[in-house]
Amino acid sequence: MRRTVLALLAVGTLAGACSPPAETPVGEPAAAPVPPAPEMPADAPPQEEVDPAVVITPAGAPVSCLNDIGEEAAQRLVDRCIAVSPATRPPCNVANACELIQDEIDRSCEMYTPGEARPPQCEA
Image (cartoon, rainbow, N blue to C red; front, side, top):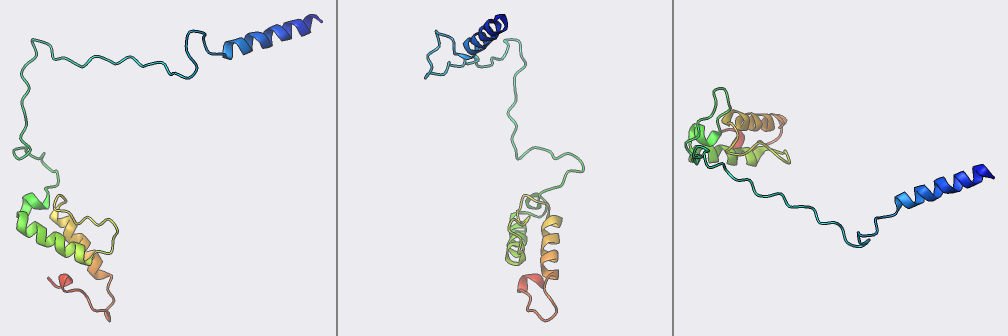
């Protein structure tokens, strides 16, 4: 009998601990506190705006084809790449290195068998 009473008390305590607190409505979530916006200290040094056209690429970083050979030549290379590449997401983009774009052209053109007619973009 004593074990039964203790078991009922334990179950009742556990069931009571699982119910939500009385002051929180069941249907409404508690609003999360909004943190204040960060502020610069009064003695902080001034921040400079950086012009992306003036940014120097780190040594060893790949240079975009656009910056390497210019807009017109880079776009011609990209157009050739798009014309011959069977890839669903080819690297034919002026932001990529010219070598990467040319490698995709070469890879795509090598897929043609000797009897197949290759597109004229492979001959350029």
